[in-house]
Image (cartoon, rainbow, N blue to C red; front, side, top):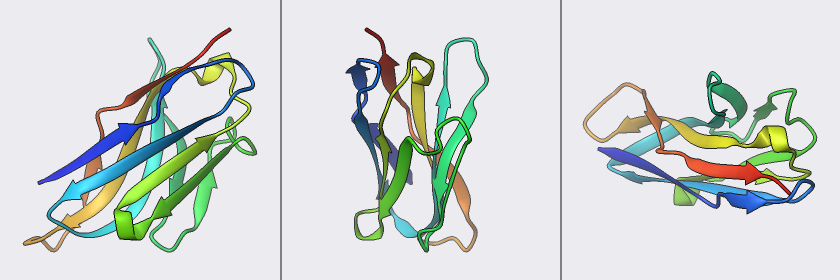
Length: 121
């Protein structure tokens, strides 16, 4: 019913920047919170940042001051501007959205397939 598709990942040198995008498509009635998570090899998935429908943001301590989450509600898209990247930021970045689809009255959690971010010199 809903797909979340991430884009913008790639290889970047330490100190560099990337901007990730996640576009939601399908029979979407409304989207509440959208968020980014990441999972590094052999590590648990970790929370990165989230943004509410009204635009309130929250960040993990590990990325605070370096990453900025934003959204375009008209495009059903969430972004993650990643600055001052470090090797430890290397991970698959996953998009999350809490969505109500047409024909339903409850929110459901949806996840994207992930996009690889590699920070290396």
